[in-house]
Image (cartoon, rainbow, N blue to C red; front, top):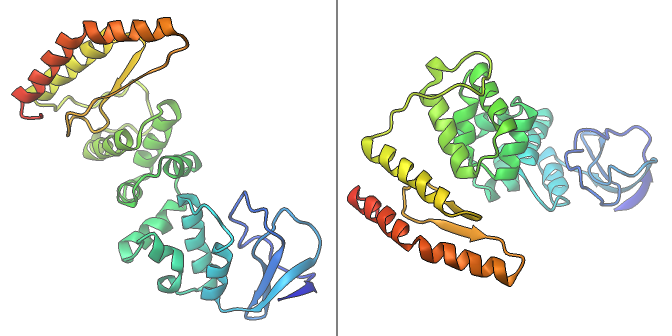
Length: 260
C-alpha cells in the first residue's frame, strides 16, 4: 500500500455503504482507479492498494463493510455485473448461501423493486425465497405489496403469508392499491372458529399483548406486558388469573382441531 494522489477516480461504483467511516482506500482494475471506502472523505489523496482483478477488488471492498444487508447484497451483485466479475468467486455470496441461477436472477430483479419494499426486506430480514416470489410478479402486484407495507407494520412471518396470499389471488388484485380490498375468505371452518376465539381471547387481556407468530402452525402464544409500578404488576397478575378458564378453553379448541 502507498499514499497516492489520484485525480481521475471513480467514486461512485463502490459507494454502497451509507455508514462507511473507513479511511479513503483506492485500487485500480484494468488501469481504472476506484475508490472503495471512506466516501465521506474529500480530496484526491488515497491509501492505494494497487492493481486488482474485479473479483478480488469486490471481495476487498466488502471486507470493509460490517453489516451486509439485503440492500448491500443486491448492490454488490450490480457491481459484479458492471465489472463482469465471476459471481461464483465473490465470497459474500457463498457466506450467505446465495447460489444457483434462480437466486441470482432474484437479486437482479430485486434491484428494480420499489425503494420502500427493499428497505422493508432489509429491516425484516425477509428470506430470499419470499423475495423471489415477489420479483416473479407483475408490476401491479409488486406495487400492491409495496403500498400495503406503507400502512401496515408486518412481522416477517405475517409478511410472508401476506405475499403468498397476494400471489394466490393475483387475478383479482386491483391495478392500484386500495386499503379496502378484501381477500376472499377461504379459511376452513376450524380456522374461522379459532380466529374468532383468538380475537375474543385478546380482548379479555387488557394491557397485555398476545401473539401467535405462525398462524397457529404451532400452539405457542407469546404473552408480554409493560409495567411502571407494583400496582401495574398486581393488575397484570389479576388479569392473568381471571383468564385461566379462557386460556383453558382456547387450548381445548386447538386440541379439538389437532393443533395442540
